[in-house]
Image: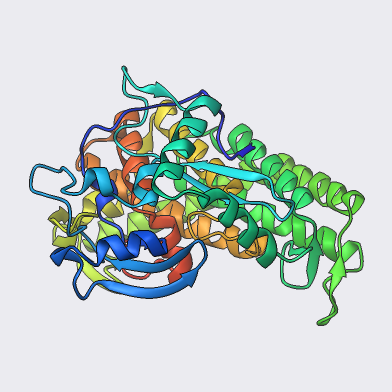
Length: 395
């Protein structure tokens, strides 16, 4: 059993917030689809989507039709297995090893919560099997069958085995936690890390003589060890300077905005030129209207050390997740790093929206943003769209 999170480090208890009941759709097994078809709320919302052990999707595109106004499920005892498994998701590696991911939500780390450890995972699996006997055997059979022996490493041109790629991502995640948290400017520090990681990988792949033309190349353990070493050196030698360079560029833009009283901001899928005092409107993750002043989401703020750590640890965990948040095993690392860069912008602007006029973003705000954005799979939405379109971003 492989966890993408530290087993036992977190607690969980459902606080009946209803956040997990706003999916784009719910995957259903054939038995669940048959049961769902008997509910009037599901009429016209069942779509065939063969992805064994699933056969259909209950299309929600927002609030689940079975969520009532008290934030309770009207069919709780008959809810689909994907709902039973929350806050966990499951898949299998090419070798048949169970991979477990943990989703953050407002029920994460509540005082009287249950430790999310191997015992918690096993209990959840038993509950899923009660609803769908043989669920995990079928999931394993299908996932192992559909996996390729080798996966893209950095681009589609370099291939490596699953374990080597996972170990590399885990080391990159460790480096991110050790490096990117050393500062107060979240966006500049994280972008510096992600860009240097990209540069280090590309440089070493070229030095190894790979990545030329369309020729496929297999990377072995020793090759990836060299790439890892190059990335570590790039980050150790250049992260502080590049972070500072980004901070200077951001400061220059802000001074110009303050001088002119206006700024350019990426908002609701398009670039807008607005006055700093202008009110911007968007929707929360549950569809509620949100209005903020342009200056409060354009002008940067500092993050408390604890808030910074919370956000970076979330990014690091996203880096190693398997078949979750829009990152299937076949996702090249180049795409993963690019999408994480877009996600950094989204996390920062969400922190500004949640804290409004506060001068420093505190830990509780960062925690709320991580819990909400993880529950709503915002990272997966960015990956699926190829950009952050439809989500507010700083330009």
